[in-house]
Length: 222
Image 1 (spheres, rainbow, N blue to C red):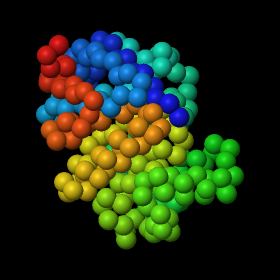
Image 2: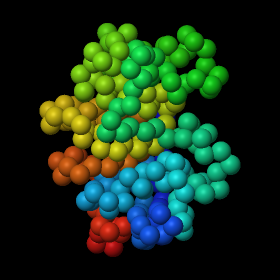
Image 3: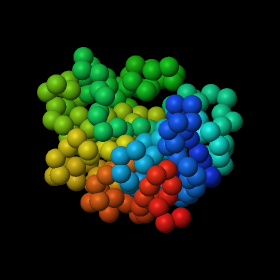
């Protein structure tokens, strides 16, 4: 696994037929293997950027390149999301009726893996995030920090080169949040992933290599 370079160039995005401007003119670059934090007040455009870089939405103008490939030119955005990008959200969004191991396997279905291969991959990832012995536990009996670790393991299932994390510690207490950040940084160092992380917490942003602050749909200071 290696990281991906991200180049966002003069991107604009509005909603509600142009009445709500989310991004006015945003440009930045994230280098391969870098951990960059996006900060700013609510409504400043942070999550919109993640959605665009994750090909969950398209910009109105400008371009987004990931490893030199234009996201606007993707023939199959779903394939890009399943092979290049991993998503971690504030809410873990785990399936309550599935075990931890089964939740981690979800992105692997339809990828040509056998049942035993999916199981082996899930157990290996649960080991990576410190959840040995919790593979058969369902989300209802896991702590908040454990659930977020399962969500991170699931995000890594397809060996993404780019991890997009939207407030990954927002629903956790400070001590558990620190543990999750330690985990993300350790995984980044081990696997070389690029991480783009949205946060409103200055302490979380301080853990990044670099911070980009958004204000009124613009990168503050640019």
